[in-house]
Image (cartoon, rainbow, N blue to C red; front, side):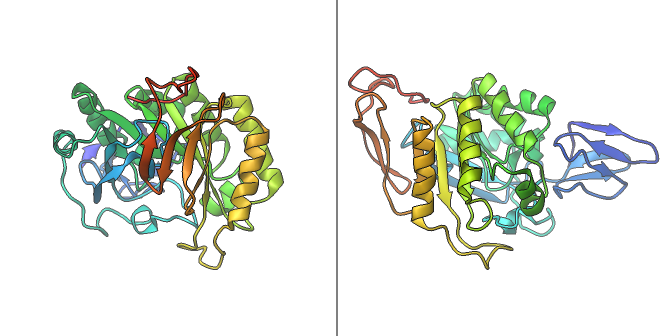
Length: 332
C-alpha cells in the first residue's frame, strides 16, 4: 500500500478524502466509495498502487481517440474500483470490485514504461476503470513515461476535484472524457454522482490545452431524449468549441440495465444531425459497424478512414489536409 495523496485528517481516527467531489469521510478500517482508498490507523492509503489487474496493448482508436496519433498502439492498464456507480457499466467486473476480489499484477511505474517501449507503444493509457482513483500510480508512471518520450492518455469519467485535476493533467497529453448525459438527475440516479463537476473538468482541460475528445453513450429511455442531446450539444459548442471531437456511442445491455434494449442506429444518427447542425466539425458514431471517417471541414476530403479500431488509410500531411486546412489534433 502507499499513503494516498489528497486527504485530511479528522478527529477520532477519521479522514476525509478530497480527491473527488464525493469528499468521503472514512472511518478507521473503512474505504471510500471507490473501494480503492482505505483508512488505516488514521492515514489514507491507496489499495491499488502498482496493482493493475488488466493490461493490454490497444489501438489508440479503442479509447476512443481519433485525433491523437492515429494508427498507433497504446499500452493500456486498469485496476479495480470506481468513484461512480453506473448501472450500465461495461467493465462492472472491475469497477465494482475491491482489490482482494480480483487477481492483480504487481507492476511498477518503471516496469510499465519498459513494457510500453517493448511493445512499441507511443502512449500509455490509464483506462478500463476510473484511473483518477489511482492518482499516485498514474502520476508516477506518467512522469516516467514523459522522460522516455511516451505520451499519456486518460480515459475518464471526469469526476475529480480541481486541485488534483490540475496536478495530474500537467503530465497528461490527451483524455477521452465520458459525458454520460446532460442531466443532473441522470447522474444522481444512474451513476450516483453529479453533472457539474464533470462539466468543470472539461472546461479546465480545455483551458490547460490537454487534447480532449468527449464520449456520450446514448441509452434508450434514459438519456436519448432529443431535448437533452440538444442541451448537451449547445453546452459543448459554447464551452469547448466546434473543433473538439464528439463521439456518440451505442449502448448494449450490461450490469444493472440488462432490461434496456440496445441503441438503434437511427437514434445515433439523430444525435449526429443535432451536433452537425450546431456546427461541431468532428462527430463520430461508436459501437456500430459503420466506418468512421475524419473529413476536412473545408473541402470535404476523406482524411482518416477507420474500420472498427483499425485505420485503413490516412491523407494528412503534417496535420493538414492537402487543401491546406489544419485539422485539430495531435498527429505525430
